[in-house]
Length: 118
Length: 109
Image (cartoon, rainbow over all chains, first blue to last red; front, side):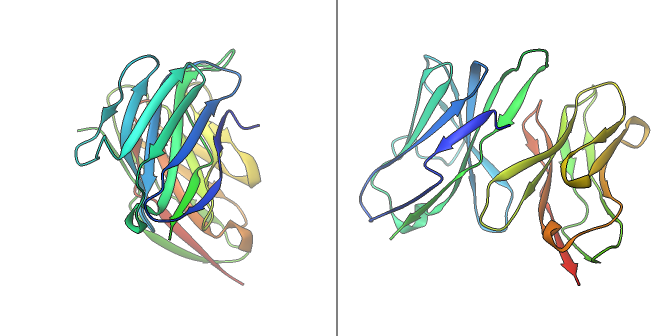
């Protein structure tokens, strides 16, 4: 079964509004969560890395004021796209690093959130 | 630099034919390698993963992959492809967060 969930799976919003995407690790504590963005027909691009209780580390070229990341607990991280514009339309995927019972510490990916900004 | 390479950007096979998608990694230690599938407009779905131990890994949907250290490869295979297998496949080193560029699979009837 799924070990990382994302909500919502799809969202459509008007230009200028803000959208929050949640990423939860199920059955394990995620010390680190990652947010990716996928452009059409391309591989995933790492946007930022967040550790519980500390500020996220953004990759070069990613606007931290536009993509707000909050890692409030060991099982929840949120990505807020502020003042969204059509060019922000994309597929956003989170992953969580942790250890399921009996397994090694590694990454698990969420199912993704498709954002469409009109 | 560490990398994950999927040499084939696009592969086309006939339904019922066998399939092998290539993945090569560059990493000194044993990597944690995953294969994901992404159907159009959908999220990633984990097919199988390798950490250590048996080098032949069985996954869902009839897929398997074999870790070959001597060739630095983790190729994905399926003996008989179904039309529903048409998708994009990603090989990922999850320990180092390195993605392959993906291989798009087309299946003809």
